[in-house]
Image (tube, rainbow, N blue to C red; front, top):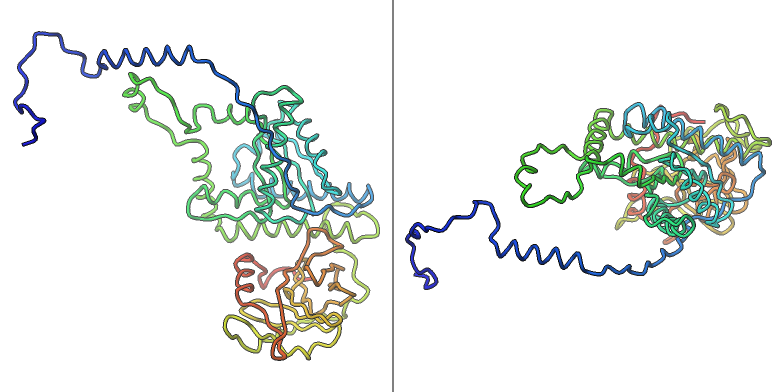
Length: 444
């Protein structure tokens, strides 16, 4: 028997009045009173604020263009964003506040052509927005910038933190003014739960900074945020007895998941990818035209003078063989200077190109209209698709004539007289490009 247990019999009735069943003992009440008195008298000192570091700009400045061309690019970027909002986001209520916010003038959009990597224009835009409390959402669209989605997200958060610091100093704000939601055409997402799917619906045609006023968010989620609630101990029973609604943010995420499942997540991804591609096409028409065109859609950039009379419709050659996760595409001596050969390896269509003494392997289709790059022309260190003039640097895959556009480039080497590529790199490309071109896609 445990020696600490003196007697297991019930204690005899006591003549002293018993405390209420849920009342705290007097010593606990006294302790609580002493704690409140201590906290009330405690001197609160302001901790020194550490300024946010300046963000690192993860993209290169765009080439300088004429003012008329820049205006045409801005109009095309707004048109692409309109299409995203009016045909995708709002009709399916993926953001239930978008349509109402726009109709009530709560949303402001800007286009920023990044001809420089200086951040001051963005800070000034943030300051301007902070002075307009009636604008709850501010979007800054950066067409044509070439930036990876993870780097873009880091940049947007760092820019917003540094910008909020500046607003404190310029406007005398004690609290942060803006939260940020980075938008990008290639945001990664998962389908494991409703919240992991949210980045899919933020795949705008262009990288976009979306600032949201925190005071507007507080008003929107007031009473339905699901945040921590402080309740007096004596009111806990009544609080728990009150039915609690699912937090608003969770309800939106769950509704979006159901709608995406109804539409088909691959189809949603394909739709957004097509919108981003259409935006790039419109920029190409502007940049490759002799004069800025009307931004109403239709048409293609001018035809390259070396356009072939007939498009190559032959199927790509199969790779020679696979060994130890590496693919032998063809014999290196098959490629004469300026030669191009399309090859199918691990289900990926690639084009092998010789420029001078160097061999390159790129994805075998132009990202504009899916034209086979075996039609392309080697001009110096660039591969030029002759149908509409899109050019690609053989060393990087990036286009110089259409900033922001690129074609995938694969590491290649010669061994045993054969041209090789890594199967793992082909597999990674397939994973990234899960929704690609279909047989009925518009070609040329």
